[in-house]
Length: 177
Image 1: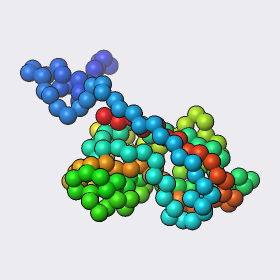
Image 2: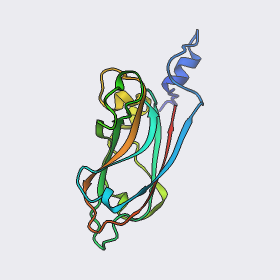
Image 3: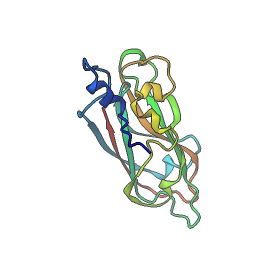
Image 4: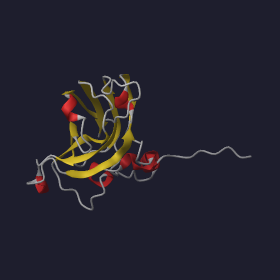
């Protein structure tokens, strides 16, 4: 066997002669940290939406971690939610689209982590999207053909209601470039 060395796209661009300055990033990670108090009336209907964190429509999302209290106190919890993107209504082509869905489950589908307390964080960025989407901008991840500009919201859409809804908190940490 022969020892081999393979290089990522970024390293290949850097070692090229001349250096290729692409759209890959080194450093410059931005972080959104936010929290919301969730009432039982926010998780008791299929289709309830909880908007968590704003990100630029051209953000390349590296990580989305969700922390939460136990929002389904029943012994046989049922609570599940999709994680996706929503228009904020703020920015270039988004006027009039505030709080409407871009893609409700482009990030995660029917996650059940809200059924019990999660204090170490549930990483959901690649639950529904393939790891090869790491360098996609949010608008591409949401299935749009062009960048509308402005901001999107990362949000939860309830797909299965809580067996016994319990009020509590949800916190989110999003890392992007």
